Amino acid sequence: MRRRRTPRPKRNKATETIIQPIAQFHSPLRSKFGIPRQSGLVEELEGEIVFEPPFRNPDFIRGLEEFDYIWLIWEFSANRHQTHNAMVRPPLLGGNQRVGVFATRSPFRPNSLGLSSVRIAKIDWEDNRGPVIKVKGADLMDGTPIFDIKPYVAYADNHEGARSGFVDQHEWKRLQVIIPEEFHSLFAPKELSTLEEILSWDPRPQTQVQHDKTFGMPFGKYDIRFRVKDDILTIVEIVVSNG
Image (cartoon, rainbow, N blue to C red):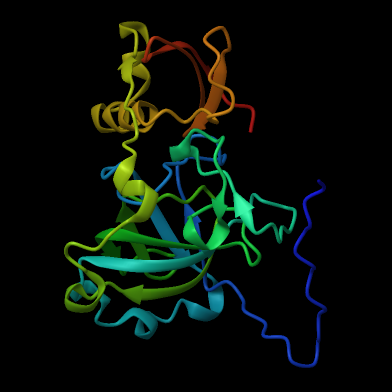
């Protein structure tokens, strides 16, 4: 039987709400391939929030230095096609089981909006691009538009003992990562450990886990190429990126 698709809503430009980016995110991850599947998974992954010119007045973030975490509301800008599918295939379920899109954090959503909690590492008030927020643990690719920033408030945002649906019954299997010694000199020690942490979460699409395939992902100025066999990920080549 043919699956019935959810009808697309008609647009009413007279009542449409228009939101604009207030900032852009910068990261060593220049592709959606390899992005951590949730914020906080790779705690030391560094990035920065650079405000658009109209929002570079320091008063916009005055007082934010007293918070440890912030919420980012952003766009899945690498997903160019709109989707109104009611159900998606979460990678945690192996990519072969469907659940409702609003019961997941899938990037394929009606409005392509993402929500992430990230840790403030530093606010650089003297940067010539205006105040720049240095953060850690983000799951955003380089160039991601940010629509809003809100402080993380522990008493309201932390719900101890809350259920997490299918996530409670499935644990993401980590990979052992082998980075041959010949590649170590390409990275600072912190970069090397961050790369290892990213790869340990298995960035491959869960429908493409064959052992004989070489996968690639950008990291900083390099393209990282690797293979996986028996839960061991081995980097086989690192080349300077053309992007």
